[in-house]
Image (cartoon, rainbow over all chains, first blue to last red):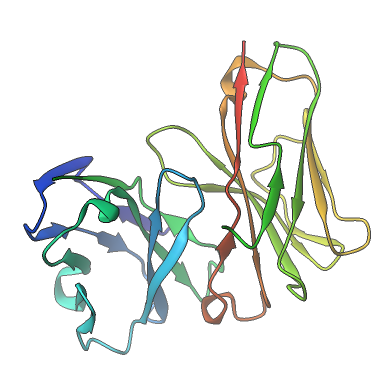
Length: 114
Length: 117
């Protein structure tokens, strides 16, 4: 069975602080894909990044960075120098070859105050 | 603005009434998904279409929920009769192909927030 755990329900920071969102996944498949989505108050989920199980390189995109560690089954997401516009719910998701469906975590609410 | 169109944005209905949601995916996207998102949780798949065919409806409560995508374009999700526990956000998503779903990120609509009283 596939499972995604986002243990942090809500994180509150002051603007310009860094914030790290944790994601721990479980799967028996050797081939799988991990995603992060952002859900602003408007409701739609916005795709941020996809990572496959064979690529453990960390990635940076502007103020966003991702740390993928297979040894700990984690795919953490860091927002550097947070801004008010980063306030949203962030979801980690997993899809595997055998399951074929996206399994979402429960999400982490990020609140950035000025 | 989301590229996947959904309506209505909000719906309040009384228990035992019928309710319907509409979704128009991104043009050319063969795969369409309906997800249910209960407050404080991640989205859960209800039904997946490939063109006009249902690929997966294993999590759809078929005694009260139905979904169709007659011409393989837009789709309707219906609940009849609605129950209090159906209160949630209903999200529609589309992708180019489900053959290798991991290569086709989901594009979501703004969702329909349903409140059953």
